[in-house]
Amino acid sequence: MRKKRQYIVLSFASTARAMGWEKECAARGIPGRIIPLPSEITAGCGLGWRMLPEDWEAWNSRLDGAGYDAATPVMQ
Image 1: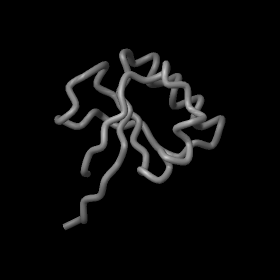
Image 2: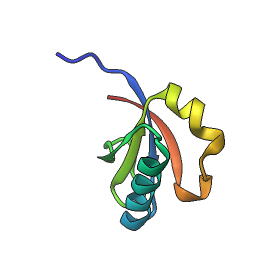
Image 3: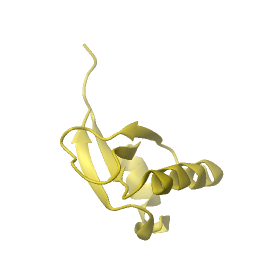
Image 4: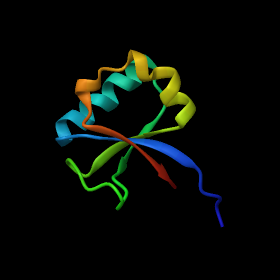
């Protein structure tokens, strides 16, 4: 069985925002990936951006908070 670890999941109001976020992160070299939102997050369009907490800490101050709705820690 795979060991669970903590991630930060960003939720989005729309699929277009999530796809735009993915494109921006790829262009800027921001680590993470698009995932279906975990069941513990009931918000937005059903897509989220998952990243490691240490990556979140490193990039958070340089990210546009208007691009996502919420950042939630989850175990996966």
